Image (cartoon, rainbow, N blue to C red):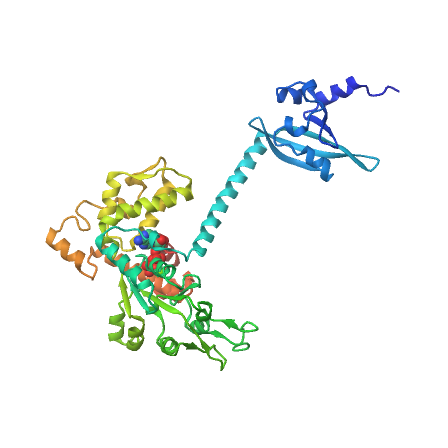
Length: 468
Ligand SMILES: Nc1ncnc2c1ncn2[C@@H]1O[C@H](COP(=O)(O)OP(=O)(O)OP(=O)(O)O)[C@@H](O)[C@H]1O
Ligand SMILES: [Mg+2]
């Protein structure tokens, strides 16, 4: 019977589609086929006897000779190409004597789908990263608050000064003006900054849960209560700051309980007798006119005085047009990172339109408009076509363009927003939908019924007004 000669073995290896390297248990090369040598631009006599990691980029052969564990279908970059590598330990008489490795060019189709998979993962990762960052980032500071207009600067300076005090703060301002940003910056600029900043949105929590959310509950307080009870947010915020967002939406019954807690500096968990002393600074925020609500009897006057010790009123964006370019710059540089773009700018025409718009949704609306534009952007300059329709179609004489300077000034100084009727109607519609969705806990079908419109129509409107 004919035995396999060395020539035969060499031929067979050459015919196979894979390149082969063999190392001893020190990771020293004892064999490398010709084609592998060609691939690496070297010769057999120059590689035999050399440590494998000196010859092959990104190799793990020397590791396999230590672990004794096979590695199959690993992607290994060599000479700017991606190869598929297999590495097997060589066991002789149960002893780890060395390893054999093979590489071959990755199938371009596989490579493409691999690349797509990685790209998808990178995208997912950046989505989750931004989500986590957002959640962790109750840690805004005054440096994050962009604005150079005199009204905004004065407000920022005032907020810095009162950061150190213990008195309650009421922040009012339209939706999207940065109320939460101010609250968080005040906390981080205060002596309480090492303790938690705990935000709670009073409008988003059903009335019957609000009390136990704020004050906690004792074991067995009600059916469905968690065993061992639950800490309330007042306790979670101990020594820190409790941010009561949308306080204007707090039901009257709860307002009385909150007032008692603030006066007595103690809370009583639901279903218990225990009283817990609390040391928490209160910052409340609302987009509503609380004074009006007090007059109407929907907000307790005593609570209003209690929280309104220091009042910050954030001016709407349309009253500080000079901040718009600065905000755009900051928002674009934030968005560039998320969307892997560089040096995105706005055309002059776009900038003019953005400065003329009245921004009922303030900075948040501006943020949404820019994010949408970056999503559809081809190059790196935002043009009018990249804007949403309602901004694109803005006529020269719309918004404040056609009124005399005196009137314009009067409008800007007025605290009651004056804007074209179609904007006011749109704003009212948006608010009505948001309020109803809050009421139905986000259930769109229920909300559509309550609003007396079809489900599709509600979906369309949510999309139009960018309601999540
Ligand atoms: N002056 C500012 N500088 C930088 N970013 C800002 C500024 N004002 C607002 N923002 C951004 O706008 C968005 C809205 O801000 P924030 O959530 O604080 O508004 P809000 O007044 O609490 O709104 P709402 O009443 O709808 O809750 C955030 O993403 C915030 O980062
Ligand atoms: Mg808010």
